[in-house]
Length: 71
Image (tube, rainbow, N blue to C red; front, side):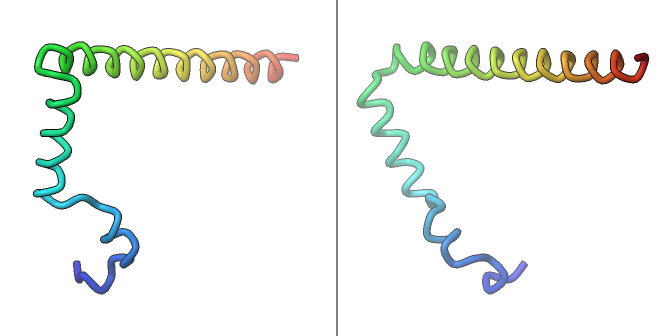
C-alpha cells in the first residue's frame, strides 16, 4: 500500500507511537494505577450492555418481521 493512496487528512489525525506513549502516561497520571482497572471494567460493562441492547432490538425486529409474514 502506497502512502500516496492514503488520505492525507487521515495521516494527520492518527497518533504515532510517541503520541500513544504520551497519551498512556497522561492517563496513568490522571487516573492513577488503581483507577485504570476500574475504568477498563466500566468501559467493558458499557460495551457489553450496548451489545445486549443491540441484540435485543435485533431480535424484536426479526420477531416482528416473522409475525408480519404469518399474517
